[in-house]
Image (cartoon, rainbow, N blue to C red; front, side, top):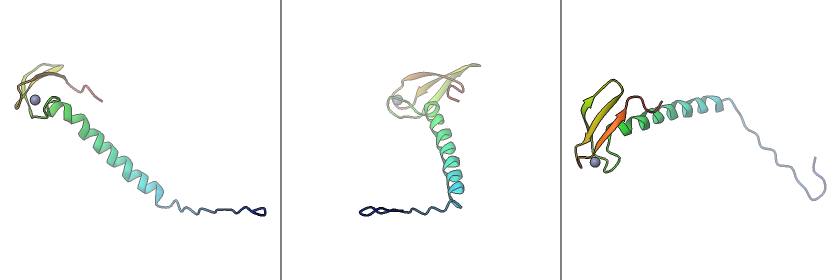
Length: 80
Ligand SMILES: [Zn+2]
């Protein structure tokens, strides 16, 4: 209830769609996160060129940039 000189603001928010909208956002973010994790294994951090696998062991892969020749030692599943 408002006193003289004040007023109330009533905000009505229907939540029927909100949970579903949040679920869509969460699913989308997981997809984005998975794609972001793939980038260091696929592209050179110096120039953005494609990486080509030169050697592979149980824990690491040696990759070389197709564009600038920089070599990288990339740990498998380094980012979880
Ligand atoms: Zn490069």
